[in-house]
Amino acid sequence: MFSTPLLPPRAAPLRWLAALAIILFFGAPLQAGAVTTCTLANGGLFSVTFPSAISVPRDAPVGTLLATADWTGMNTIYACDITANSVAGIDIRIVGLTQTNVTVQNPANGGGTYKVHATNLPGVGIAFSGQFVVGGCGPQPPAGRVDMTGNGGSRWRTCAGPDNNGRQPYGFNAMTAMLVKTGDIQPGMVSLPGDVLLTRPIMGGADINNPIVSPGPNASFRVNAVAVSVKSCTTSNVTVPLGQYTTKSFKGVGSETPRVKFSVPINNCPAGLQRIGLQFSAPSGVVDANNGVIALSAESTAQGLGLKLVSVSNGKPMAFGAPGYEVAQYAPATGGSYSADFYASYVQTGAAIKPGTANGTLIFTLLYR
Image (cartoon, rainbow, N blue to C red; front, side):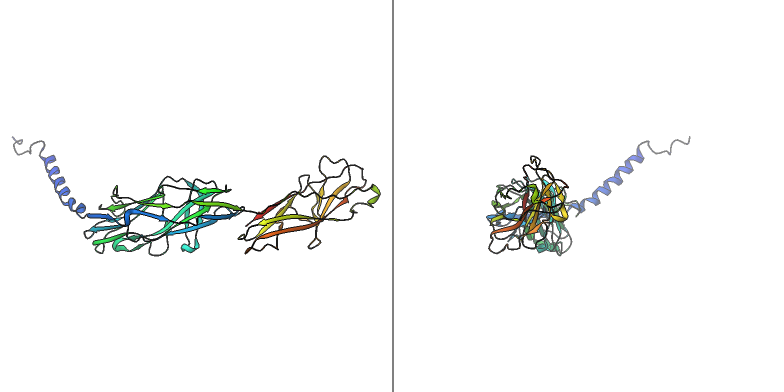
């Protein structure tokens, strides 16, 4: 008797469907604003020119900035005709290069830290910095630059709002490529014959943080080949004859034979280095670092003796290991050939001396900055 007024079993779900349809209908205008067209300007190919050849100090620290080159004429890569409040922008991504664990800073670009990617040449990487031009929103970031490879190898900037209307430019106010030391450099050629970066326009989307990236048209960025050489001097082995002596030539621990001068040759040093350093090490060990005394080599048969080494320039015992000596005569503007001069002598190190052969080995290493 009371069943007649009840609604049909599925009436309520039908009302929910109707409401959903209304929500969808009113949601549609969020997608209505759209970029009409984006035209690729300047042919879409942008090349940058590094110096054709660079020289790198052999011992420059990892992360050293080796060379920079700027792309120009890129304020308008895309000219886009858009309606007010539409989302539009530009996306840039790296092509075919693997990120290293090295970063670089470039004070000339307003600071910032940039990820470095490996090139074909061991020890040399490449990084990119830049500032976007984003339609009516202008330069992004407003000051300074960003790493153009972003996170995951790509970065984009978008603009929306009443100022982003009509024909607007999208591109880069500035962009720089940087060659960077990533490890021991093998002299050779940095050669990246294809595109290193590609851009795509962003045309539309309701969410400025999740825009629609168009598949094209792409703009390509390329760099020239660069010959890389390593700056270093030449040198050669030095033999120092100390002469023959009897045990009677020594009067007790610390007594020594007449000193013999010898020179370490530092030849054909290139111009352009900041400094040249010289370090010494003794494979057989140091007996008395305070007095510049090293042990005889293992094949020597004499006992109770060592080799004493003293600087000619200041009369002080030779210093072993870091920091070593600076080649003060080096002229960065011209380069040249130099020498570092020392004295060597036998010195008594034990209470008793056993006759025999008495040889020693000293290794010297040139360091460059």
